[in-house]
Structure formats: structure tokens, C-alpha cells
Image (cartoon, rainbow, N blue to C red; front, side, top):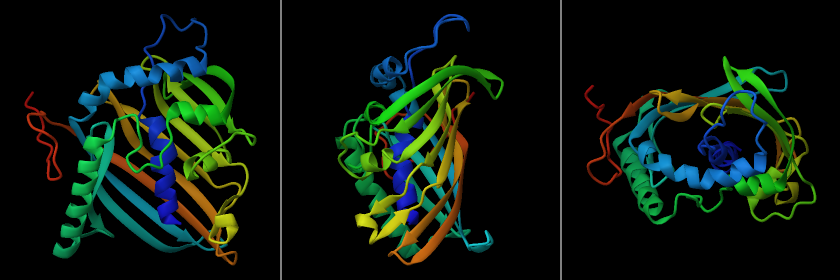
Length: 285
């Protein structure tokens, strides 16, 4: 189930969070943009920030708690990771597990895994998913019905907000698209920078894996994710949180709370090709 949670993050949330939208119009009184037209402009505008994003690394702390039926914590696991970008794709390296550094053997395995991901990322265009299971922003909105666009203030900044809900009649292919049909949520887009600042998503129906034989994600499972402006020049993830309720093998109930915090953003000079052992060396001011 934990693998499913991180798959969902990579397949659905990250493509939305990491895609910048078009530059803002003049003045707060401008008409609210047509959402699908904005998303159409995402692809072209994305290319302008890909090189800049690849000069950044950051750290992530993930905490996963297994809960009982009363909401009490039964087990807690943590992961500390280093993240960087290759050809527009996020690459994450596991550094610590439950507060302990990896053993020499596990470090070697992780290096091999990351090396393969870097090599694969270099071959795959930025607008295509690294693992072949992701879903593009434009495709998400083809599956979703978008409604109720409006303006609100979010964290003291004007934002364009809209709701979305998966269309039950949409034709889908693959796990990520199938999941999208079961979701509804709200997205906050910073109006000045046209970046996704916050997103909330909820399962509005049960989602069955292998017809429910393997697992069933229950209605009400929810997630939210955030981004923020870093160094006054680029928006990057700051974290997220959520709750998953599921039934495994049609018998065992499963409840999980997860939280992710992204921090320690560093920019370095790109003088050579990004490799698996690249380290962030902060620029001299």
C-alpha cells in the first residue's frame, strides 16, 4: 500500500505541482483565465524553467504511520531522501531509513538504482513520465470535469482556484488514469507567478486494484500537497500530507497517515552533465 501512495504522488500529484502555468495577466481585475487554455500553455512555458530546475537539489523527510481502527499509531517509519532533477524528471536518492544511514550494501544497491534512473531520465523527454506510468497535466484535465473557477487569497497572495472531479464516463488507460476517475479536488494557482501553490484531492469512490482482490482504496482517502517560491526565482515542492484507508486481500483493513516535508533547497552551478553522485555546491554570492 505504501508503494501505491508514492506511485500516486509521482503519477498524479507531481506532474501537476511541477508544471508552471503561463505568466499572469495585468491587474487583479483581469478576467479569470479559461483553465484548459492555461493548461495548454503549460507545455511551452515548462521548457523555460527546466534548466533552472536542474540547478537545484533539496531534501525530503517522509513519515508513514500505520493506524489502528481507533486512530492510534501502531508503527512509524521514516525516510530521508535527496532529490535532484535530470532532463525535467525528479530523481530521489534514499539517504536514511528510520533515522539510520544505509549500510554499505544498501548504499551500493541505492547507487545502482539511481544510476539506472538517471540514465533512463536522460533518454526520456521531459514531458513524458519517467516510469511510464505517470499522467500529464493536459491528460488529467481531459479526464476531469473542471468547475467553479474563482479568485481567493492564499497565504497572502491572490490565487486562481478551481475544482475538479473525475468523469466516470472518461475512457482511460493505465493505473494512473483509472485512479484519476475516482478523484475530486481543488487547486490553488498563484496568480502572479501562475504556479500551483496548493492542491487538495479526495477519493470520491472506492478504487479497486485487481478487481478488489489485491486491495481496495476506500472512499474518503485524501491528500494535499504544497509548493512555494524558492530564492525568488522558482517554485518547488514543500511537502504534503494525507490519509489512506484500504482493504487488503478483501479481508484486512489498513489505515495509514503520511506526511512529507521538503526543505534545504540548494542551487549549484551546472558545469558538467548531472550524474548519480552529483552534489549541490551552493553558489558564491
